[in-house]
Amino acid sequence: MTMVPNIKEPYGKKTCRRLSDLKEYFADRKAVEDILSRDDPVIYEVYEHPVPPEGEHLIFATTVLLPGKVGDEFHFTKGHFHFEPDAAEVIIGVEGAGIVLLQNRAGELRQEQLEASAAVYSPPGWAHRVVNTSNRNLVFLSVCRADVGHDYETIIAKGFARRVVDKGD
Ligand code: S6P
Ligand code: ZN
Image (cartoon, rainbow, N blue to C red; front, top):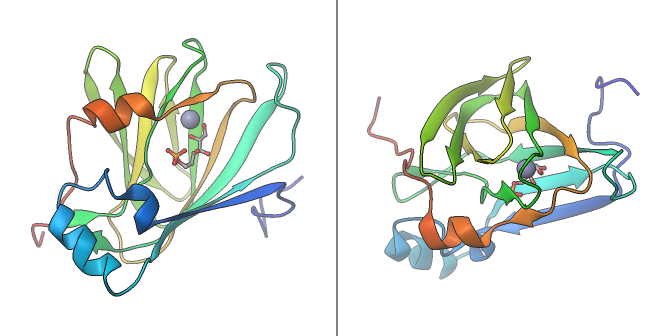
């Protein structure tokens, strides 16, 4: 299958993450409540391609992360560790630009630029969160073993050591 022209097709499952799904992730809770009192905007959509959930297969999922901010914090994906500690991931930029935050369980943080045709490697044992710092969609393809399992709880409990905010520059 070619990545061009439509990286989202065919997909087996589409997940839509709205602000209400990310309430506890953004720092500015008042900004969250203000926006939710008017609307529940889509923050990102994930198109997962159909593969068996077994270790010899690879998940390849396309994420469309919409531009925008909550307070002064740019839109981001929830971010997660893999339960399989030896399961790495490759994140490939398709459209737009942003940042990948990588953090291991010891709290060490790395930051990588993501843009079209760039690849970011999330090593085994590192959590990954993608942030859209641009004013257009950030589209990326993620590839990892199909049996990784996603640990969101650690991120909800501890967060990432860095937040990406708009200070006008
Ligand atoms: C899966 C891979 C991506 C994310 C997607 C949404 O291992 O990292 O497909 O699931 O980018 O991010 P999140 O953190 O909400 O799963
Ligand atoms: Zn992952």
